[in-house]
Amino acid sequence: MGRQAIVLNKSFSEMAGALNSSLTAAEKLNCLVQITSRSLGVRGCSLMLLDAKRKKLIRAATYGLSDRYLRAGLIEADKSLPEVMEGKTAVVVDTASDPRIQFGEMARRERIASIIGVPVMCRGKVVGSLRAYNRIRREFTAAEEEHLITVANLAATVLESSGTLVPAEGPVSTESKTTPRRPAVRSPVRSVSFAHPSEEDFARLLDFYQIEWVYEPRSFMLEWEGDKVTEMFTPDFFLPGLDLYIEMTTLKPGLTSEKNRKVRRLRELYPDTKIKLLARRDYDRLLSKYGHGPLAGAKTEGVGRILFSADQIQTRVRQLAKEISQDYEGRRILLVGVLRGMLCFMADLMRYLEVSADVDFMALSYYGGESGGEAVQITKDLDVKPAGRHVVLVEDIVDTGMTLSFVLAHLGARHPASLAVCTLLDKKVRRLTDVPLAYVGFEVPDEFLVGYGLDYREEYRNLPFIALVGQEA
Ligand code: IMP
Ligand code: MG
Image 1 (cartoon, rainbow, N blue to C red):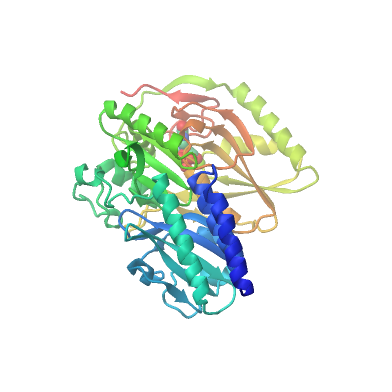
Image 2 (cartoon, helix red, strand yellow):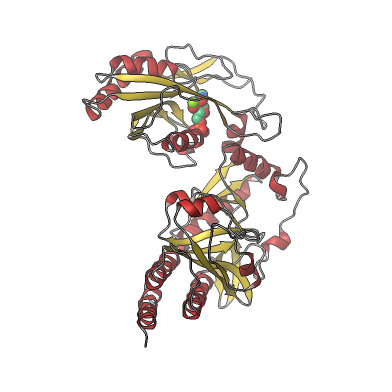
């Protein structure tokens, strides 16, 4: 037996051990790609699954690839190694010159010179792709191809027995037949037909924040009777960048408890799967923030209950400034504020700091250009270069976290020496995307707040305290 054959053989015994263990399905898949990557001696490996529309590939397990590469974007099944979708092996010997590579520049920066992809087949149907990435330009041997095909088969059995695999419109799914599809009314968001208008609104909001999404990515088996699947669940959205499923509750309140039950069951069966329920009221408010949806025209009657008095705010801001001063002792920091809500907070915070601080601002616009492409945009960038600086991003309030993750991605890409977030208020219960918050003034309930810089339609910013907005008229 040649050296390579021995290595590959040994890797099968490792895989068998992983598969016959109490690991979760996701962990087993991660083991498979990791062992394969090592035994083939390649840069990395990934296992990707087709979404319900069989258009995009969603990563289910990866090994050896950088976060930056994984965030490059969703892979289009018909653009990247398309032969795999026909059940064939695809080999790219040189990623620099092959048109079957979707993110060529990213591949080059990742030092991926060649790629082999084989289909993952389930009951005769292609459900995904297993890929190996190489640092050098080269062909792959027949033994390597065979090895990958075997691993793809093992992965398929893991997927099938765990019930995570069934594509939403696949052969086992009954849901897609019973779910009514309404024709898109407005210009369809990436020509997806949504089951409900609020889903389309939500998709627009995600587009707006440049958060990648897949609609009805796949179905999860929830209940069985013998071999027969008796209950399935298809979450509305998957956000690959956040590795998060979103289920929206838009219909009758009675259905909400039913959805709650399904989500609970899903978490129980698939503990690695992150899913969030988004209630109607939550995204109505989300949309109204940007002037859309039913609450957009709601009127308020002045200011309601005071949550934090001017004194309480000052005391807390002084404490935050002390913490920051201790953490950055002897260093010079760059305070960055996103206009305009943080202005009172920033002004007070900087005066209590005992370290030297530069100050700079960014401005975002939430309204799209004439071209129709609505997206959050930077309308004023920093004047100070953040590279090599200790940046403290100062925020008024973190709500869903989408603004912050957009700003952090922007700043992070400019190589600061460090990057931390200081927010006065944290509306934690509404968080959609996890963002690291180093300093938090107060955790606040799911209410709309005004004052001390926070506005309701540009009003109430100059109040010295923080209060709820008044009752809707
Ligand atoms: P996020 O992107 O959903 O986290 O929203 C953050 C931004 O929404 C903040 O910087 C505020 O400008 C605004 N915001 C969120 N909640 C409130 C609130 O209760 N009052 C005023 N503005 C808010
Ligand atoms: Mg803000």
